[in-house]
Image (cartoon, rainbow, N blue to C red; front, side, top):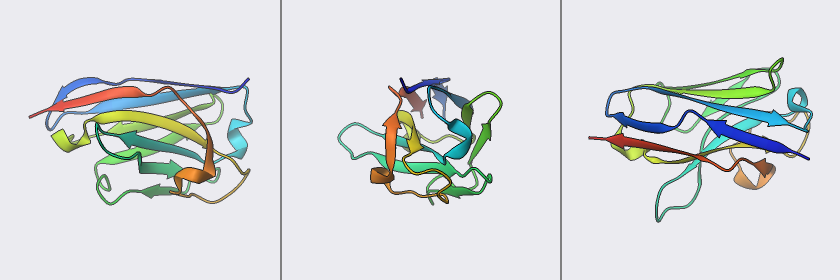
Length: 125
């Protein structure tokens, strides 16, 4: 059974930092691109960042230069370091696995097939 468990969310002041983690089990983690997405109240889920098996990365323009995605294949874990947080970063953050092995980084939501339960990030002004 595939399981993705996010952690590290919380409440932080604007300008602060958080580090999200996503532990994956029951899945060939090292063979798949991993992504982070977020969904704010009343809005659609949107792409945040992705990292391929070759550690190539892709970021949404809104987080470029502030967020860093990384992965540890030995721990089956993907991370999202979030710095210089803004109130507009407030959302539930989800990690997800790309459905196809060894595909380059993609931002397309429909290409991800397994999702975690999400972790809330709230940035106060």
